[in-house]
Length: 375
Image 1 (cartoon, one colour):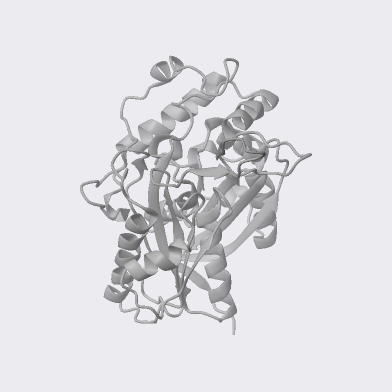
Image 2: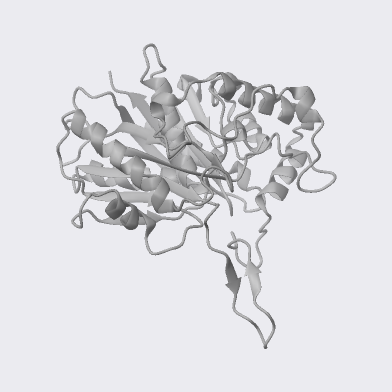
């Protein structure tokens, strides 16, 4: 029997700058406290169902199934399994999508899902030596095979800005908005402190367009992406409980109306959310104008602006409390962070009824999820 899946008890760590507050913490150290807090919140709300699984997204971790290890470290007991998902920057959102499909099918009734990334402790890897040569450090996975474009994400963001005519000035203006909004927001209610770190480390007040304009391009002298209008390399974790609407009756929740993934041109991975969002809106019969809030991973200002232009989105509804440009982008966790951010804004009194989360993914993919406030 099918069940309507909902998201409850959304929580996240602060987002740490790589090499700083969480420099010595592993994926387990970051994910386990959030898992414990989510489960404690559920129990406090009277949801006593057994945890069927833990599903976490992760990109650069040590392997060995970080979700299972984190579940054990959280004290869930050996009977609670765990599985790790890798869809690169969309991993955390994909983990929640997979959990929701299982709950919708009736196969499971409570899954904790989200994502975690520790760029600080990700292992250094090397390609096998060839003909007696020294091993070459493996810097990133290929996003596409031989014969396809495979640009680094920063280079691709510059290319996207160039072909879509998105100026440096427009990118800096969007980035200044992100920095300003995040600096003015209070995220304490959604955050699980880790050690002495209680707030997002990257957020800096006073990042004006004038200050941003002084920064040099990061990915080539002719580029427009800078350290100020792009995300930072980050550490963090986010988890939501995915359960049935009937089991969560009376608890603040977001109903999952649908989700979608799609492929796109690997040369311009920043456009990946466009076909995913179009597919999702078509499936659900929702018009973009009906969305009250849109959380898109702000990997680069050019990416968000290109997606907004293509879909005709109202920019005032995009990341209304700032996003990854101001807060950071812990790759495997970022999609789940979007859902935590949606919940914090939609579940407050007078919050918007409909929200959408979307991620661009290296290699030319997009993922999107549509949620509504349970009244």
